[in-house]
Image (tube, rainbow, N blue to C red):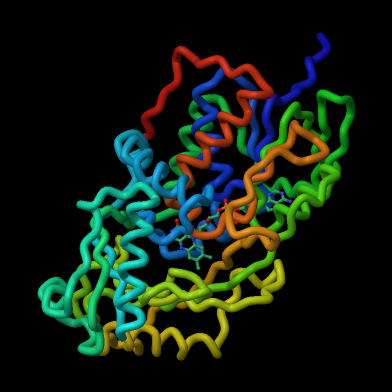
Length: 383
Ligand SMILES: Cc1cc2nc3c(=O)[nH]c(=O)nc-3n(C[C@H](O)[C@H](O)[C@H](O)COP(=O)(O)OP(=O)(O)OC[C@H]3O[C@@H](n4cnc5c(N)ncnc54)[C@H](O)[C@@H]3O)c2cc1C
């Protein structure tokens, strides 16, 4: 008997949190889907090099897709907390002002939060005495803070694994060590995706979630709709039981270089300090750590919490934001030359926060091209 050739309905390129989220949500439909990942393990690039915080959503520029999907994503996480059995911790985040100019910025962030859809009861402006009651080890130079009570700490790698396990349980395939090297159109309806060993899979749609390689994958589908640049952030992790008590995620006021600079408790009891922000990073250097940034991270940490013992650093890691060069947002769209390709690119922060909403958004786009029928036996629970 001749074996019937598999033609996938959907091929997702990249098993970071984006590919994993979309794969998991696609598991509920009666389709053939596959995730292709070049590395031997999943979620080993930007999804492992970040602060791991579901942001409240007050920082993103109002009106952007990333502002909208951050707030929607935060709400959708409540489903994932119930269904996917991964560790998380609800935590306050405090954006700290060190001078009058930064104090004014807190009002700007508060108003932006409301405009982005946060409820008034999610945010509060605190004076120094109020901050000190919550954070006795805070710098005496702090003059005020915006407190947001709706942020959550997670481990994005563990979540990605849960998402993919659940997708696989519901029939989605995952191929590791599968580096996409070429894409050709076989007919108007079917594309061939080819790896660096010459293996081929056939698919009707491609969802490009290739992180820093997203624009290169887009070129393989014949489009140059967007380009990406990279901004690397390095962190130091401080050993547990060596540090002053920190109860909240403590941010500095955002700058053009990003909102991320923080001192934060980690899920495993350690303390996270960073990230730095370094422009002009090549694709091969997105996870590098440098001796030059090591001390800068120490300066950041002790500026926020002077009693931090930075000498108790137990590891140093980094990740890079993938940034859409031509716009100030996520780039999520059909390829201009091929409406069977969706590019999910430039997923800088708050990509993790927005992940469930990005998956919903992309699935709505897929539905305009492919009929998605719900499976009767979809198992949404992952133990
Ligand atoms: C310093 C820093 C701090 C951050 N902090 C936060 C935060 O606190 N909260 C938040 O919401 N967001 C945060 N982010 C953003 C968040 O980390 C990203 O939005 C998210 O991880 C992006 O996931 P991704 O799946 O798009 O990319 P990635 O995780 O990079 O995944 C892309 C995948 O595609 C694979 N791939 C690439 N090319 C190919 C190919 N040719 N063939 C097959 N596979 C391929 C890669 O191997 C990789 O596994 C932060 C980012 C950084 C850098």
